[in-house]
Image 1 (cartoon, one colour):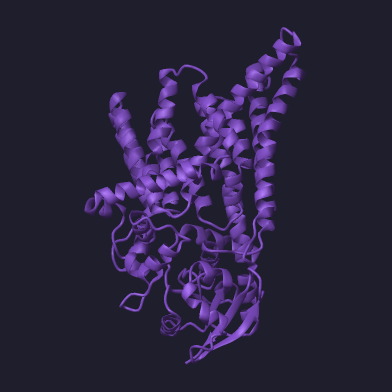
Image 2 (cartoon, rainbow, N blue to C red):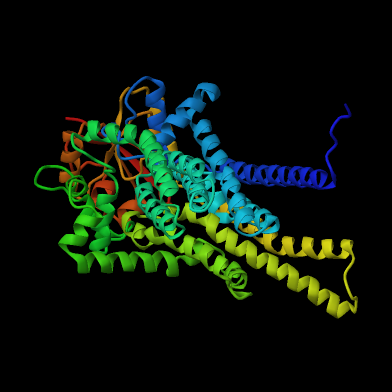
Length: 548
């Protein structure tokens, strides 16, 4: 019997698939390379990074995933440190493992973006959007830091893709995939619950309208079941650690700050959130046991809505340049409004609008813009559509100016390359510029390494910057907003061995500690200056030993 030979259509399909695989591999490789370059340019770990690494370290030691304070295992999402710890079994280093996980998942965001573009529009839009994910400065910056939102963005965008597919085709299969991805996203950030409700309601409504309610109900059940299979372990862990049913114990203090118009990095924020209460704890500890967003909305709807609106305005309008470079914004409009919308096209944008509804309240629940990462794929798709429209315009204009009835294949290719370079190259340059002009407070790292060199074990460091405690191999005691005497008393009651102060911190956020810094701690018995660096410069830093 003669062997079956694929026909011309099959050969074309195979070549197209191979071409897509090659393009995707090249774009993912580009994304990885850019993120590795930026990661290598970073001088130190800061803020949440040190907590995620410490959690992974504790997991490798067989302990609970305590963060840098050594007091909480629930303030940060649990999936990310588990993945980092698993990779660290191979790399033997949790820092490099953390970077590897972030770079990998940030680069893999290309895949759901590509799939969205191909399903909703066409292959060219899909590849263009994937390339934009690879080179967008905000995504490169996030992907080169040790942070769980890279994992969250990937799993959530995968959930949104399969959630879109389950509305119309292969409902059960896509429902299971969407539930699995969303459950993993929940373990990276509890805000995934918003999307569980949104996708579930959409599935039921679309199923009823299309008169396939039985299929939709079955898909909905599988979707919810798979979600909870992955989410329930996280809920059990949170409840066990906190002593009551808890979804997340992090956003409450940010909600309080939003409602009361307190911005991190201001002295008003420090006074309100870091002051010492009558119980001897900083105010933020009591605030974290207070009202969440929806409780605040019920209790004081006016202040909560106004605070959320103010936060959204600051993030989406005043801070838009930090999210998407301003020169790309016209491409979004060009991509969306160049042609008249058909009903099918309108439904695509309606889906994106509905799944983006949480953006109305997420600014009130987060102190930074990391929550926007999953939506960058949507923005890249819209920019990619504008890119393709610009490309078509460029080809048509070139034909008109040159007098050619139609450009040759080579001529069209040259125009496409020129337009791609116009879009891509400035983004790569901006990413590298941002990376290499960023300055890090390395004096905190150097101070931590100096403390580690002293050989003290289980050292506790009181500081506003957690990196010193991390590099010292110890735990952090948060620096309160208090007088010198109250600050030292707080440190002693919380077992602090050292106090770390920098000149810039004291001048901007702790002016009441100026005398303590200037006198080398001599104004308080039992406080001794043991380290002083950068005297007379902006990087001046002093370490005090606390005894007694």
